[in-house]
Amino acid sequence: MVLLAGCTAAGAPATQVTRAASAPATSASPAAGGPTGCAARVEEGPLPDWADAGFSEETPRMPHVLGAKGEIVAVLFGHPLAVGRTEGPNNKILWVARPAATPSPDPSASATLVITATLDSTTTRVTREVAGGPGPSIIDVPRAGCWHLELSWSGRTDTMDLVYVAA
Image 1 (cartoon, rainbow, N blue to C red):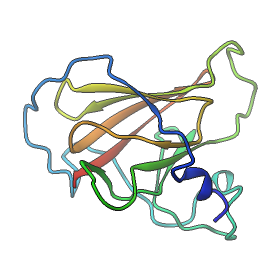
Image 2: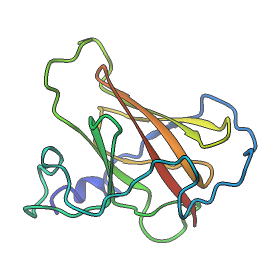
Image 3: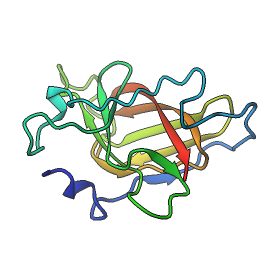
Image 4: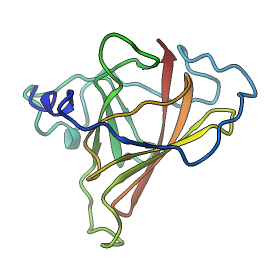
């Protein structure tokens, strides 16, 4: 695949910034099956037409999660995503934004993809940034479980849930 090379070690990992303190979980979150209230739905079928540009196959079949508004897709090259992984692929995610129907509502808005992730049923919150906007990244989180992501870039927003399992 053409984009796979862009998502390997040559791709820069996301900047990891912690902006809020962690607190212990209020309940155990079974990561493998997805905790209650977790809307993470990993699709195994073809990517949306608007997200498959650059792939060499006509209809690439990659694990992916579509944002709640359908504005962005997370293509999971490191599926399943894992905390404490010592072998195998990293938590590689290719972020692909749906082409904007109209110009950005705020042309001065930063293109950087800002990911604010909150662990389900806790106050654990971390922020990750992908410089230059949606593209290849490595997104690690401190604990296994369901993470609710708020995504913003170029004046646009979307949300999604991603599950990270213990390695």
